[in-house]
Every structure is written in C-alpha cells, then in structure tokens.
Amino acid sequence: MPPNFLFLIADDHRHNAMGSLGTPAVATPNLDALAAAGTVFTHEHNMGSTSAAVCMPSRAMLLTGRSLFRVFGSDPAHAFPYPMDPALQTFPELLRSAGYRTYGVGKWHNEPELYARSFDAGGSIFFGGMSDHDAVPLHAFSPDGQYPSEAATPGRGFSTELFVDEASRLLRHHPSDNPFCMYVAFTSPHDPRTPPSVFADMYPEAEVELPPNFRPAHGFDNGELGGRDESLASHPRDPSEVRRHISEYYGMITHLDAQIGILLEQLQASGYADNTIVVYTADHGLAVGQHGL
Image (tube, rainbow, N blue to C red; front, side):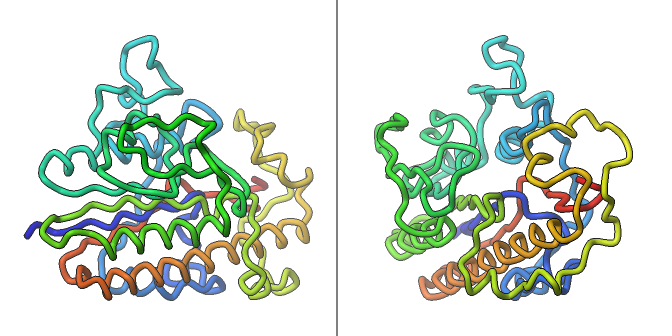
C-alpha cells in the first residue's frame, strides 16, 4: 500500500527552538526523536508576505508548491495579499484524487472552500489566524462543505489537546484498506502564550537566558516596527519582559511536544506507524527578543 502521511504544522515555531536544533534549554524530546530518526531541513526559508500576517501566504505556498507571488493568481478578485487562487490544487486535494482518504484537523487559515475540496473528513476545525487557546471557535466537519461562522462553537479545553484528541480519534477509526493523509495544524506556540501551568513552571523567568542577539531596539526601520506583534512588548525592549515572553514561548513548545508524543503513540497503537511518513514544520518563526523584535 502507498505510504500514509501525517503532516503536522505549528504556528510561530522558530527554526532553532528545539532541544536538538540549537536551543537545549527548551525540552522537546518527541520532536528531537523525530529529528534523530529522520531528515531535518536546516536551511529552509520563508519567502515572507505581502501583509503583516505571514501565516496565510506561508500556508498557501506550502499547500500548493507555489511561490509567494504565484499563489494568489492574476484575477483581481484574488489578487494578493488574500485570498488564495481558487484554481490551485492543494497537496491533500491531489492525494484525495489519487485514492487517499484525507483528514483536516485544527487551524485552516485559508478559504473554507479549499478546505472542503481537500478533505474527506476531519474535525475541531478553526478558520482563522489566532484565538485564545482555551476558547478556540471550532467547527465540526461538514460533509456539504459549508462552514458559516455562526456554526462555530468554543472549544472546551486547550487548543493543542483538542486537536490531538481529534486526530487520535480519526486514526482509531480510519479504514485500513485506504492510505491516508492527515493534516494537523496547531495554533501553538502563537500568542496568547498561556501554557498549562505545569509547562509554564518548567521555565522560571529568572533562569531564562536572553538570546545572544538580543537588542533593546531594532537597528533600522524594517517597515513593520509598528505592527501588532511589535506592540506585545514595551519599547525599548526590557530584558525581564523579554525573558517572560521566552519563558511562555518555551512552555507552549514543550506542551506542544508532549501532545505530539501522544499523537505518535496513537499512530503506533493504530498499526500505521511503519508505513507513515511524519512531517513536522511551522508556518514561520518568531524573534521573541532577537534583534530588538
């Protein structure tokens, strides 16, 4: 049988914020194990965005294989920055047409119509960019492909756990005579960074080290110094405040790592692990104090 695909994508996970990839201070044992057993891309780059929200075009590029200025199409109704060209095919849509059963779980920061075309099933679906992790507006899977905003209901629990619970449920009920592609998109470690207390307590602020390229202010006007993200901390950057942000960021990442471990255990228990390609990535990184950003 063709290989299955379990595709995991985080939100704002910086390239080196893993124990095995340059930041031993953050605990990521499950992601480190994936890295040790597989292939790590250490020179992957994001083309950026035509707006302050990098996540939407980043995901569109990843889903379609198109570059930044080719993912929005030439129709003025679909000109950049948004929305994505509806004529483009996503990789889950391509696999679906090839006989795969496709599942979509978690954040879908592109058009609902593209979600409906891409997936046979799914759940705990979030159409949007960011939300409180304990109150994510979620949709159940709609067989008719309709997802009106008023149909969403607040999730009862932490976003990462809800998404892993749903993905685990789908794995348990997957018919074994079909290969699958499961796309699981987390909202972690995006702010508001509110990790469960046991993970927040792992990184006392006083013990957090500032990055070596920390600066109180960025060295030049990059055109986005007044954006939403840059208003999350005071100007000039205060070291103690940045340590708090890093502490919360690491807590979110370690909690995410623990939940990914639970999902990988379910993959093993379901009998699919030996024939499943697991991919972990993120839509883009985050400075969290680096270069004054």
